[in-house]
Length: 64
Image: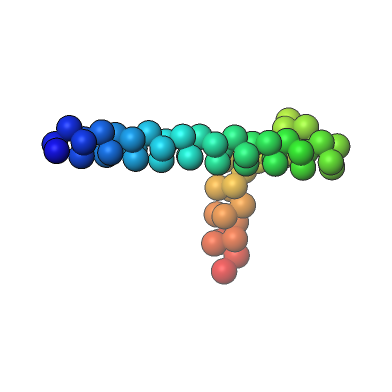
């Protein structure tokens, strides 16, 4: 009985891991589809550095 319970628990854990991997793959596919639809590439998304964000937040705090 212990072997069956252990097998069930391991099976459930493996299924959860597979579900998470599948979900991430679906999200990645949808993101790529949106990027293609809007003719964007990942580098052109205009990333902002942490220093720029900190500078803007400090300016907002100083202005208040």
